[in-house]
Image (cartoon, rainbow, N blue to C red; front, side, top):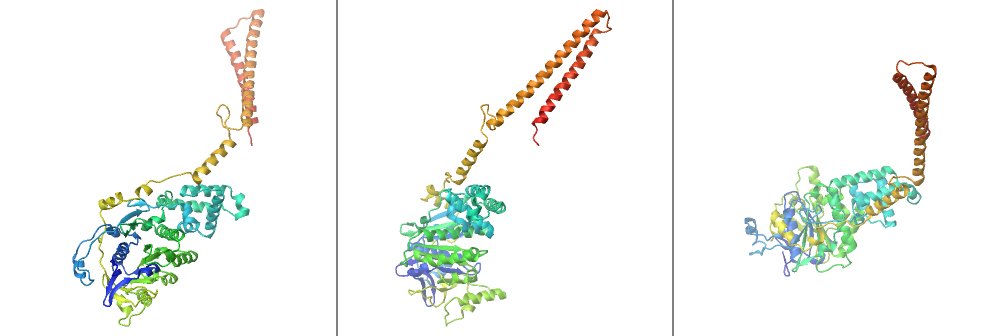
Length: 528
């Protein structure tokens, strides 16, 4: 709940209200706790409190529960019991302005990024490439940049990789070896990524990161990402959110500490960001998180254990809400001890013991004071949301989307000329130059076509000559035989059979002649 008197009121303890200092809200934070202890409700309370203060938020909705923030809440027995202890006898239930997003474009407006925006470093992590393959991918991006080839989607990247592979010898001296095996491995990884639905993420219109900073009616707009399907692809999920953080850092101007931040970014299931991540990339994440607060952006991680976050990054998370942890195994007990050590101790109780006894909706809370120092940890009860707890129906979600002002901007994909189209045109032009068509539409070079025609004419001429020779010889034989019989006065028993024998023998001779000539020409044209 936010009012000018109460400020960013999040929880209540025996020692008073637990309030986030607006100037320190960009110093990042952590919401931790075991499953079922109330992390999602705490996230919703914090988000709507920022919303009421005019601060927009971005959050990933893992199960659809956070969609309820778009609808006003109502009284329940749980709220009835707690409202007086929070000093809120008559809750003003209200909704927040919401924009639903979905990488796959199913439960919200599509969020797209171009391959060029993602860059080779994040893309290499997404594809799970080794060092050699990562090097080849960087070379492909460099060559595309030099040639002015825009890489927007997966088919653009495939075309560029194919071009680089075919012209590898031309670039070896300048960039090093480009093996076809590495290119093939990258192509296979792209195919696998496409089968996971990433082709819907890469493309245009690219998402304008400034749309996350929208304010409507004095309230910050809540950008809710449908992540239930995206969660099934952990690397795509974490790389996507890391890309958004990087885009915010590179796009927004320096503003320093303000009365209130420009944007709060909630990163749920934060451990996915760091699982399987190289040290170089973790160092990059740490740098971005450390510096992005000067852009007026606060990042709040949500995870089960504080140990899910690398120490260098955990040390930058000043605003803490720790829900209950279980200590059933030695590993769990160690995690509880580490979590307790991250708080400024309270002499009134043992932080380590209290963590294991907290009920649902209770938490250990410590926020930064006006000087940036963490306050003493307090056992607190987190406020109830003023918006609906739980998911919207499909009809309610559709109604919110139909009233959105950005649907026309993102809902229809665009496929303009880029690397794929340019390289395809070049390949077709090269093919036409190397194998032009003759006047009859036959494919081949002019010299090859003319030579083939001469060979065909020569063979035909020889066949006709052989036939003519055979026919002439046959007629001569028949006439000569008839004259001889007439002079000698001999009579044949069957003139017809004699003539047939002569014709048959002559035809066989002609056939042998034709066969011999054809065989000679055919064998002469074979190339071994």
